[in-house]
Image 1 (cartoon, rainbow, N blue to C red):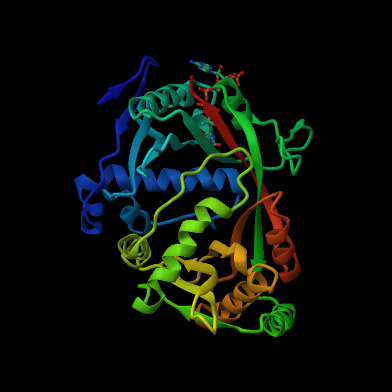
Image 2: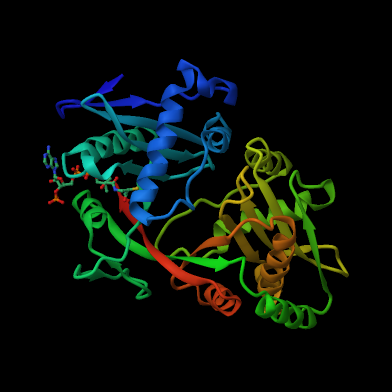
Length: 365
Ligand SMILES: CC(C)(COP(=O)(O)OP(=O)(O)OC[C@H]1O[C@@H](n2cnc3c(N)ncnc32)[C@H](O)[C@@H]1OP(=O)(O)O)[C@@H](O)C(=O)NCCC(=O)NCCS
């Protein structure tokens, strides 16, 4: 048990049940409560439920895995669950990075809970020899609050409570991220026109689509593209390890979705002459197919840029998605505010900004 110097606060390591069947038992109580509080915190920040997840959906992400160590604590203040704090330690060789989050219900803010949790997280990072600490937060639009800009010069966020918290703990804002939504219930006329244009421009390539688990014939190409995601996405001064992806990692990644009964469509562009996979896009929805969908990774390999493959995989994915998941109302996506090529595609398709977030970084001495 971790108790802290703040009176009435307990930061308790999260007990992770091995299986969903335990969620209803005392062994699963903390996990189930953690999920409920997580979803309430997200709702308090965004005003919508599109980021909600069920305990069964998140549970696979907390099972031991060889790609990272994941620590999490629940914050209990005067006997009441008020939030959670967690840190991920990637296990890529030579990694110096760690990624963390603290999420507290609003009624517990400003009492030192976040600072106590942060001390625990920073100590954990140091124990693992990590010196580059990074974290993301949503910074909802706030009238009358001064805006702050990252060194990229793209976008800004309000200098709000979370921003104060980061700065007070030695963090600087590195990047602004835009959260956009696409209405799946509206007209698809533009998407269909853009798909036709991209198909015409992408001569020599064809679209292939699959639902995980990934078929043998696509595993190697998909693994290579996933590894490029860690090196090629615009990252400002943030630091990411180059990830190594092999068939086993693809299988583990696919299982995170399939074990949770989520539905996923991967849309890729294949170079016809060589069979190489050159671009991809992932769409995901929860076990409840009527919830909002999420756009996960999108990437065009550097050597294949300039053939409208980004537009091709995005539009082909959306058209198929509407057919396969007809009750999902919208797709949410997150992009770096300086990622013009990706934003150009999303804006043309009809994604509209709904919120902004900040990416924060601290380098430990
Ligand atoms: C950002 C967040 C983690 C901060 O947590 P918090 O508990 O409010 O932070 P603290 O209470 O430790 O510090 C905030 C303020 O309270 C003050 N404070 C600290 N200890 C205190 C105490 N014992 N009594 C009263 N005030 C205290 C701090 O001095 C600080 O004031 P300042 O802003 O003037 O510097 C929390 O607001 C939150 O969960 N937000 C939503 C999710 C989010 O954005 N997370 C960001 C990281 S992922």
